[in-house]
Length: 367
Ligand SMILES: *Cc1c(COP(=O)(O)O)cnc(C)c1O
Image 1 (cartoon, rainbow, N blue to C red):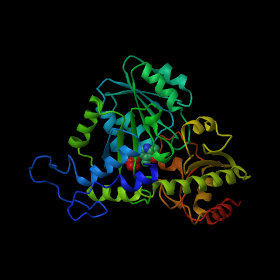
Image 2: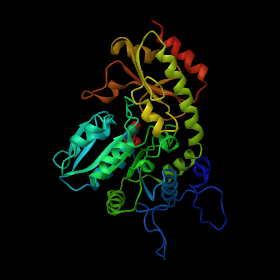
Image 3: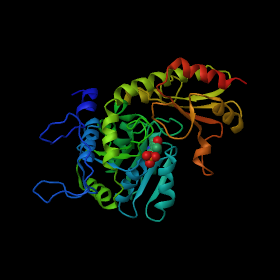
Image 4: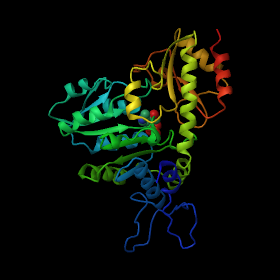
């Protein structure tokens, strides 16, 4: 089956004699003790199984684990590492996961942050205790591109696991497991959910190995699992994911070109632009460039805040991946430890009509 077909059909695991076409929501927390039956909803639930089956297929993995947020999914990977392990992470990564590594796992795991757009920096950071390389590409919020294949080659030579945060690209545009990664992570709050109304996260594994057993133990015993309703909603949303992503990417590509030619713009970060330093690598490993972009306005934080506040169709709010356009001055959301430039505006380009989006941007950028 092709992606569009899988997205529509792989999320159904209906076992009901009346044969509904859509997987019903099973709210029961417990199940009758019978051979092959589920036991308890924290360990497993029909809607979660349907979602996990769907995600494993979309990412070409053997199994998946759904969580109550993207952060919970990422944390499950870190918790599955032996204490004392070292990991290598990108200097530009989702700030919440970075905060986990620095604050929550302080004294338990050690981490080296490197510029992963340069694979040599990854190789140089490896020490005997290195057990995991965490990749995020395109990265949040600078849209940096890391070469997944090259990093996985370096990792496999040293017998190190690679996990890739694939939230920005989605399985529509990038499949890290096919490029050599062992694990894929998603914040399903974003494009998978697609309507800014579900919080969720997921991991997909290439192989059901011992490490994956630990991850599943963290999921089921840690208990940061999504509700039947949220997993149902995700299966519903993913049916339109391939078409939504085509729209997001088309709009983002045109908006990126528009901003690049705007006199008030200092720089634009979008991997689809030829001038983007990661464009060539993105062409090799992505089949589309996604719906996220960032740009630097000429001026300071106050100028950037003004642009954001004047927009009508781009809501000034954090998060991304919904059908509605969202925009924010990113450093303000990341708090005092941010490394993001103060004049950087991050845009999640939505599915409103492109003319409305461009007209709105035009009026907001007027000085
Ligand atoms: C939002 C996000 C996360 C965290 O996911 P939550 O669902 O908010 O917990 C992780 N990585 C990336 C790239 C994200 O955009």
